[in-house]
Image (cartoon, rainbow, N blue to C red; front, side, top):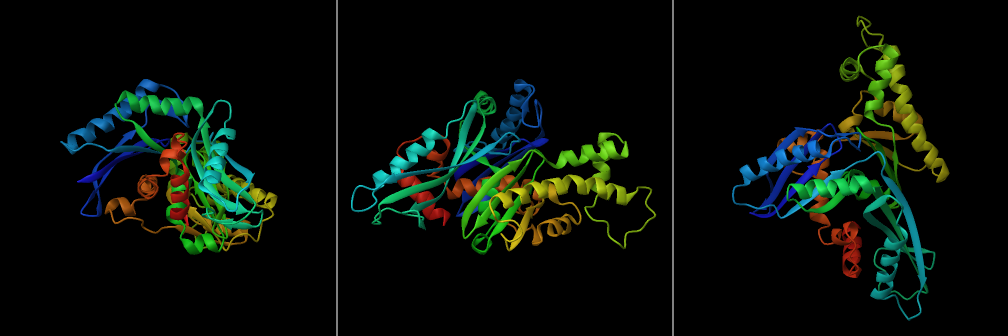
Length: 390
């Protein structure tokens, strides 16, 4: 047994912990544990001790199941309503005959240094592309003969208090985090294939804590963004609009909720399904219109993508794809492909964040050392990331 990795998916109502390993070149699951989240609500720290206790319960389960095997690395999959994503562009003149590794290193350092924001911590810097002489996009500029080099990168940050809390909580249970992976990054790398990225796609993840989306244009990320509107807001709207308890509202949403009422729907239901649909529509329309406003600012509204893809862990509301299609005027689909042959894990959408993080951790093992904790020896790792990314 080799390459034993623990993945923790946090920030939902439960914490999911899994231990993966590689056995005879096959991915296997050694242990899994799900616990109701204690001490945290919507990304806010309510009780650090209770949260640490929840992590410890999962860890103790792992220890019992692993026997003499040891976890090599720990990864945390995260979405957070206060996450900030900034795009940074930095350039330099090339004084020699061709672009060298030192030029790449110089720009990589500067991106990290200028990305700092008060009270926020960088958890990921994702290179988008190199631009040569303000014209050509390249994945590997070293050796090319040009006069100006630009690095475009997306910087993901979370509140420093949250970052410190995550690190300290895992250290209390003797686990050192190798990488913190924003869900939307891993999701876009796994759910969108070459054609999706090449033909322009918007990927939307309506999560329990936030809505995230990424726009691809000609194989490059045009933009990542987050919206502080999520699945639970729909439940609150139903509770207020229909004057029912919040738990009953959640049940109504799951059993009778639909974005667009089917014309063949029976009217025998005691619920006013049309009124319910209006409540649901209002919130989802707000999400989609905000995304479309962003597309307008980028001058890509109504004509950017060949299609919209939605991740359906929280977004699987009946007919939500029809509502999105009506607003965006584009073909809309739910993502439903399997990414690993891991039995029930591959077919259960609740575990997709865990699987995405695992696949990402395997694909970008070397590069994450720079992306998570500052490491100035980045020339090889950044170049390696670009070659893997394309």
